[in-house]
Length: 396
Image (cartoon, rainbow, N blue to C red):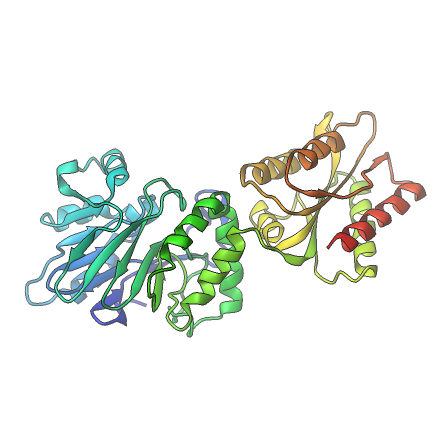
């Protein structure tokens, strides 16, 4: 998609697709890439809404110049979010368009100076609710701190009712021909939007709820995020998903995550899975934490109500990848799950003790029994594991 695409009167998508970066934020896998969405409003005053990763500057500038006619230049750059995948081209753009004024909130200023050494005199600071007249279009700014950085904000075009939402409502995956919700496979993108939300934004769910509450009064016809599809057919679709996810509403199903060095803990996990299936649970996700990337595990954990964690003991503690998952779930403030735990050890225990501490200190429905096997699971252990699966299913 090498040409600007009109999304509304005078407003164009000028983003790019990234199929080269393997790990988003150097941690989250991008098997199908990611888009960096930027927008331009061509009014009496020309405005850019966010930029993109600096490695794509050349094609980005070409798209900008395609829109600019009759000697026009870029008058403003609105910065909704300063993460470098959206602000990376800022410094070079400032050199290409030296008269361009940068628009951001008070917290944005330090980021701009710190990242790109652009003096604060070049930044027009806006407060919550402030407006900017462009000609036919009027932009209004809404501060949404910690969705998911402290300086994040959203920009609303009052004329065309377009909400430029920053990272909110965005997802992984490139835009392969279509850029709108009525042009793409929403089943695919919904999962990638949830993966983005659960991996990156979910920790700040309380702040997402505050932002959604403030935006309820707006008449929004189109939601234009900085990643993923633009929602023009049904913007309420993505808003409703964000509302549900940020309230940690979950679906009926169970995620079993296990760590197993020599197969004994895997046998335990499979016994639980069979008991769940016999109890009528048909949405079961079984993850070997040594093989499943944490990105996909967290996505499933965020989606489903039931969570069962099992670990072998490794040097008197949790198996390291399981320990990383548990610490991540703690940091993400996961709550409201039906939780079961199990594990195994040989010469020293420890893993189940740590899982129990995690289970008891959070807002979980902690299901009994806790099953810990010494060496290989015995017939009695298997019976208890089946009971755990049955009890989790009943709790759902």
